[in-house]
Amino acid sequence: MSAAVPERSVYGMAPLIRFTLLALYGALVLPLPLLAPAGLGAFLWGAVALGWVLVVAITSEQVILNQDGLRVGHPAWCGWWLKRGWQLPWSRVEGLSAVATSQGGRVFYVRSSGGSASGEGGARQAFLLPQRVERFEEFLSAFTARSGVSTASVARITPPWTYQLLALMSVALLVGEGVTLARMGFRLP
Image (tube, rainbow, N blue to C red):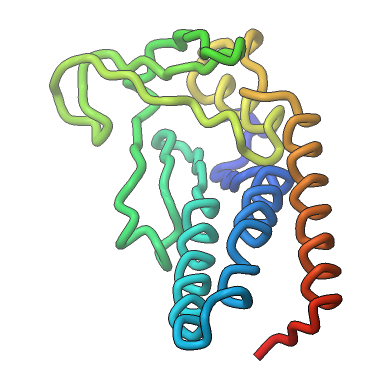
């Protein structure tokens, strides 16, 4: 492999996207236990905490590129129960296929040349190329260097301003809820 390509690269979800999803979750559910009837508050705090763990787990998806292939999945602390992901050896990567989304964007699928995601024989398959990863340009360069497949036409699935706007609205909602609850005399338990 080229000196420019690290032996192993790990890419998590882009911080802006992860923060936005966590802030939106908080804005939508944090007021619920405070506004619930007295007997339901403790149950809802537990549900909010459990939901928080689930959202953190879902947004901890990782993309790992190494000399063997590409792997999309979750870290060990949550991977054992999310059981979502795939892996594909570089020798099976055939190309990329673009598919238009209903919002006007494009997603890309990694086509495999006969074989399953685990590398065994079988029918051709396609796997969604991650487009919400941190260091996106570096990820695309490493993917191209290892697979030989051009990623020149690949772009993020949504422009950053959409997540920036949603993050701003989520923070504004959290601040507004905090001010409203403070004026109503609510105190955290």
